[in-house]
Image 1 (cartoon, rainbow, N blue to C red):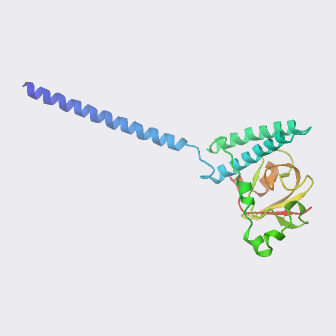
Image 2: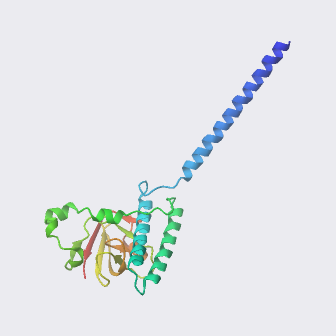
Amino acid sequence: MSRRRTLGTKKKVALLVSAAAVAGGGAFVMASTSNAAQSPQTAAESTVCQGLATALGNNQRFIEGQRTAPDAQSAARIANREAVIAQIKVQQEASGCAVGESAQGSQAAAEQPSQAASASAPASQAPPAGNATSGQQVCNGSTVTLSGEAGAPAASSNQFPAGTKLKVTNLDNNKSTTVEVTSVSGSCALLNNAAFEQVREPGKFLIRRALIEKVG
């Protein structure tokens, strides 16, 4: 009789342990799934995140440049770009991207000349972008993203002075915009919000296949 009770008790304990293990395992799986769903995407995993990371990096480099070589307007420019960076981080969070991740996509791409440019003329014979003649293609291979700044359509550049007019064409949808360079940035052509809206594809913050021409 005593032996039967002992065996019965052992069976009950075993069943309870098994049930607890199953419940615990289920909870663990649910937690893992939940965490995976909430894991932010990196620039390498999402085109949207890459565009935002590039925009963030461009603005950070601009601020670094202003702090390295300040002038009378640097403080105002830095404050403006810091506000832009804050807005980009809001967009990163809303898009499920890693908040605060920055990239140098535009600069890296600009270093790779396009095959068309290589075929038309040796790299050693190509004039610097700032000395390009009107109507000439420039910044071959550059990607284009947005600065996050408001205002009328405009651009900023690290190769062209203020007043230069650039025509930017998104080759993925054949939309183009002609804008005037109004400030300095960390890439060949960085469009503000209004200009980027004229050529963007819905939901994208980066133009991978861009044609940039100096037109004035």
